[in-house]
Image (cartoon, rainbow, N blue to C red; front, side, top):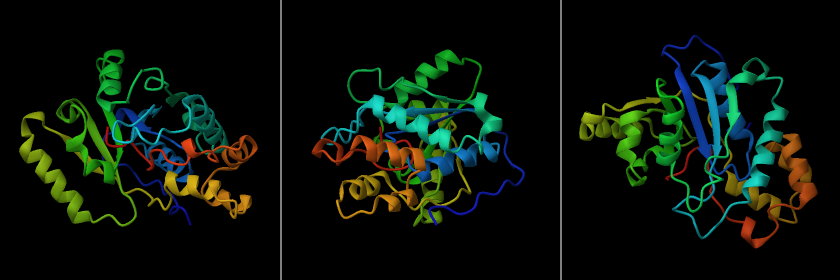
Length: 245
């Protein structure tokens, strides 16, 4: 199984008004879709903004698939779970803010831009636990801690105490920012984009097996277009959330 069954118990916390889910989505896979379903079905947020990155400043040597292709793949992926998220259709946006900027993508810039658009709204950031543990390397991370709630989604193999210790550290060292950080009880993701790209580029891979990682429309589009078979598409940023940016 790629992820555990999603349940919908009562949410114990007040939902974040807007939640940003960023990353390269290179390609968008079932792990990403699991997280989208989770935060919507669990009522973790009122509105979800999906923001594909242009290029991570930490991985400029492995450029991702062109932005237009990744936007198309995200739309196809959302179409494949349209029935599941139909009730939330008007609450989900896919934004090309970072794709339209020159140079590397910085999450702090995107969040600042959204704060200007929604001045009275507390904006949250959905971030993978691996990236969360590395957040002090991010550009203007203090600004992120000061202005935004962090919702940390767990990855398989996480050590709960390590996450808890890092939260304590940030709240102690940056207490003036009053960081709001919460670890989610989300389904555990068993797939990374780099593994999908490797499988797609392997001539020994059975195309039908790609459905283990990719939704049907995404798998078909990648196969039909021959994506991830060129050297430039074999690297890129992996992971299910916002990378260290």
